[in-house]
Each structure stands twice: as structure tokens, then as C-alpha cells.
Length: 235
Image (tube, rainbow, N blue to C red; front, side, top):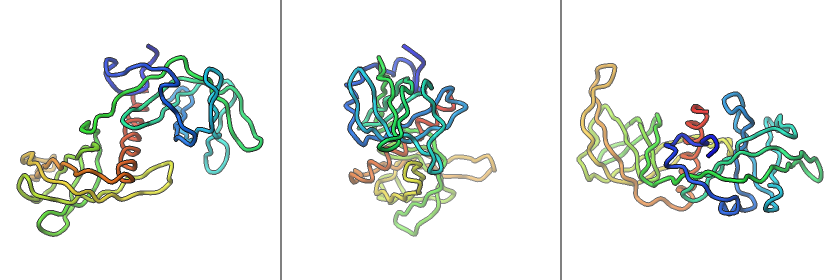
């Protein structure tokens, strides 16, 4: 296998063919010129493709100008679909300016993918608010998954099984805005923790109820961003 494009144990990374991704027109892609540690991630959309020939995508823009990509540049391409994150190495075949800015990418010989489990926790540090039987109070989210989060509070929130609402915001780069989710769930007690500043803190697992379709997509996209940030640090 070529270099792993995700920060996982190699045993967790599987291979598939390009057609197995079932890329749809309009699918969001992230393109990163090599070496990844020196180049930003760029966002684009699929226009179409000819299997075995080329993948057509819109030329990524940076500050409303075409990104600094040249024909022959080696790139990593990543995308998220359902519960799978896909990644592959490619290169820029051709840059086109008419009838609009777009480019051809090489079709990869192999694609890496990993399964993103609903209960797979990714590390975060997000300020949030939680509401149980009392008023809203601040908490710090320490990890996040589609199915829940570990939160830390300087005040007791409630007993295990307490119904709660967790409200948190996060940025989505491709939307160039911050979104706020308010998720209903229940508490799982995780014990008392002594912070570095010496203060006592309560930690709770929050199990989310089923999210609505749009909220689930937004959360998946944010989790994918965390995954890619971790990939960039390892790249």
C-alpha cells in the first residue's frame, strides 16, 4: 500500500477501486498539493468523470482567485461519503478556463478508505453549554463522535440517565461560516477529575439521541474535518 492518507493503524485502512466510491456530481472534495505539510487543503466539487481517464472538478478558489495549482502537480484527494472516508493520490492533468474554471485529475489505481464508526471519538476542545434539570451552564467538550461526547464541567450537571440538551458551535470551512447544533441526549457519569489548575471538575459522557438528517450531515462534515486535520499533522 502507498503512504497512508489517514491517521489510522494500517490494519484499519482498506483498499477499493475508484468506481467503488460512487462519486456523485456535486460531491465535495478536498485537494492538497504535495507535500501536505507545506500546502493548505483546498475545497472543490465533482463535475463528472470518465472512468479510467480523468476526474473533472472545479478549480479550487482561494480568496475568490484560482488556487496555485499547475499541470503535473501531485495531490492528495479526500472525500467523505456515508460512514466512509476515502483518500487517494492523484495529479493535475490539465487546467481549463472555458467555459469556466475546472481541471482534470488522474484517476487513481487504488483508493484508501476507513470506516468511521458512530461511536468513534475524535479529540476536540470546544466550549459548549449543557442544560439538564436546571439552567444552561458552560462545559468543555473533550471529544466528539456522531453518537456522543465527553464533557467537563466545574459544576455537577446531574445523575446518570438525566435527559440533557448540549449546544455547541463549530466552523465549516467550505461554508465559510459557523454552525450551531443543539442535541438532545442523556448523561453517563464519568467521574470526578482534578484539572491542571487544581480545580475539581466533573466529567460526563453525553449519549446523543438520533440527529435529524441535516444536523447529522453537518456533524459528519465537522468530524471529517477533524480527521483531516489529524492527517495533516501526521503528513
